[in-house]
Image (cartoon, rainbow, N blue to C red; front, top):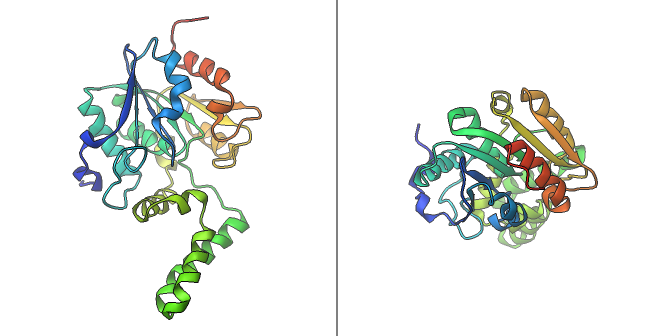
Length: 259
């Protein structure tokens, strides 16, 4: 199978590298974020592990893909990037959007992944609220209508459509808008059910981006997985509760006690 990501060179990817120790731990950020978001976790973990935190194509210094990538494109690109780093097997820690690529790689190439830590991870398509469904219907109707209108009507209606989108959508370039539209509709239910690696699910109690309902569904699908819900935390629960997050990840990775 040919993937759109095949034309994108792994040499273009911006990434952070810290510490030493095997197997390496690869961290992947969420939509609109950057590798630096993991700084608080990288500093202590790098005392015992080699840490690599790449910026996904389209974010934080890594060039955008030249086409509308989906989850599989990001996953296959990640595999090629791991090969470039001479990494045959790794632990994966992923936040939000980054969880999609991690799930696809771990499901299709279990020999490459020792363990998974999924933090507020995307991957399941849950039923939408009536409000979200209506906004989506409006946006799709406007997309179809705008090209049919006279010039004077196109700009205000296009602006209206933009306002119907999420903040991530509004901030994205045309290419990344296409990526976002594609990946959020991809349900990884089957892939999640095939995961066999030791898996830690970390979620913020007040996550409004990927609700706790998604975490509970993932836990039911991944045999032997562990779910920890951090009270009072949001989508970036590892920033809201850094000490608790570090302790849970440390235990999950089986690192030597440092305290």
